[in-house]
Amino acid sequence: MSSSRYYAPTQLNEAVQQLAQQGARAMAGGTDLLVQMRSRLEKPAAIVDLKKIDSLRRVDITADSVRIGSGVTGAELGENTALVACYPGVVEGAELIGSTQIQGRATIGGNLCNGSPAADSVPALIAANGICEITGASGERQVAVADLLLGPGRLDLQPGDIITAIVLPKPVAGQADAYLRFIPRTEMDLAVAGVAVNLTLDEQGVCQQARVAIGGVAPTALLVPDAGAALVGTRLDATALTAAGEAATAAARPISDKRGTVEYRRKIVAVLTRRAAVIAAQRTGRAS
Image 1 (cartoon, rainbow, N blue to C red):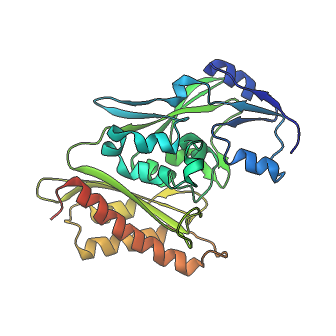
Image 2 (cartoon, rainbow, N blue to C red; image 1 turned 45 degrees about the vertical axis):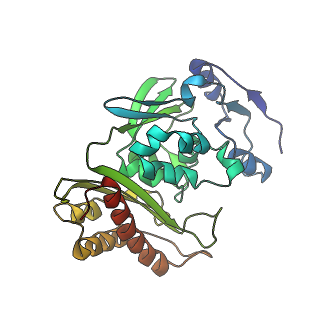
């Protein structure tokens, strides 16, 4: 591993200045960066450890929003009962990142910033209409999670930019989400395909809104508006679920590799869409 300068700022403005240096890399949990450094895929001139910035380690739930600090770990998300009640699908995705040991270090912001098309935390954030709060040398800005992703390992971030939090709207009555993935092994593997569904049912069990996001089957995780539209106005009968699955398949742009072929991934993403929609509907307590 090459030698790098190491910083552990306690204030956000310090971290922004240090990250603006040429060749500097942020370290949230380090579960990706350190592996990349050992494999000599990354040789940062400086490492800026964000773990000591308290403002990045908070989860705040208000009457209108759920704000998840980018430095919150998967283990901390799973232990937050109020967050699990609001967004079980978001927590499901975050809790699938690595082993129990990794869960204690890996952060939701780090998983997002790694830019993996198969990142488990990302589809549910997109389905929830998540917004990234970003602080950088030029000030503060907000970017939708779906718009932040530009391609494998590529994000809409400038040198010195730090995602400080991901903000989700507070769920309304009858709203719930779910995330499912398929992997070749029983655990600790990258998703062959992943699907998140966030929907709202009225008291009669009719779907009023739905957002479907897919991962592992395109250069980035992405929202599939046609899949959500197929569910709206229905009671999530077989016809609606099939149409949503077909829309997810149509939007997928997978590759073939040792974990699955293009054809297989297209089939799996449809199955996961149908199943995740049913789970989300059941969680609303209004499904017939």
